[in-house]
Length: 477
Image 1 (cartoon, rainbow, N blue to C red):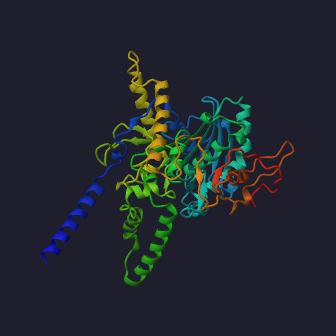
Image 2 (cartoon, helix red, strand yellow):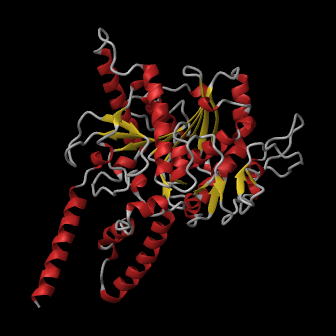
């Protein structure tokens, strides 16, 4: 009897300690050892946030919802604005903008629309290990949207870049659901730069605000030199280790069950939803970290991380924000933060506002050191960033991350368990031919990204040419 009581006390104390650590955990701990970002590398972030906000405006000449510091964009430089009616649900709305001041061609994609069924279909179109690409796994629905976008706008982006004298950079920006789309679009574009006019890798950039977990760890680290994820404090989405499609399916199922219970016993299911969501989000808390890292099908937020921290010591009150950056391999935002700001920090409006504050603070600090040399010179910071990327790649290899490589250009070996294919449901994403030439069919590009080597393994094929046959019926039906 005394032994049972002792064991029970130990279990209760252990559980109480775990609950205490979970309840007192703050998001600043995730990036406590990261370095501070420089104003030069963080400068594009507020600008990209404003371009994403511009997607929500039907008329930029007469905007309805103006950010705190204004849009600061030229409406006449908007090349194209595409709505849900034009995408027919195959991708979120987006704009193409030529920024002549900063010499950039920007494709900005909006986030999840809670009232659009097509966005939920894109989000739920995935299963664990369903889509393999470039030696890792990616979200199937987001990959289809990325391919559709390239099919629709690939020739436009190529034309704009060539018209700029091949001097402008090509930037892809997105928020929430759109961040996953542009991240995977960037991965495809980087592997096939010849389809976009031969643009150099260093001229391609992606900014994913409040990023969705859309690719396996080896890909997230491999493309950290071109993909930049921006996370505001307690944002829940980059920390949600459970696949989003599982969360929504579980919530829908649990909601129906508790709805039946409420009809029988008079219980209001609204009281149970927060607990149900918490249980779904934390269901894999007890999975060992090493097992998580070795699961190649597990998704992570992509690329280099920029963490905007404004509440450093508690959950309430706002301090002047600071931006920390790193390319983490283990400990990559694995903890859900129990905070009342977990959803508000996901909003693009707050990300734009706080990133602008952080940028102004960094510039003020730099302006105060005019008489003395800055701590980190710009060229030195670039070399440091490159070294951080190499260290992260080596760290991934040392941790036995599946398909991890030591340099971004290494072609990883693939096992032949999962054949990469985007043929399901992408019939409408094909191009029509024109009198001046044939446009690239990105479906074929993605499917031909792999070839079988002599050993029978799937090997990345970088010498993929555009299909020579004629594709008709380019408009979605």
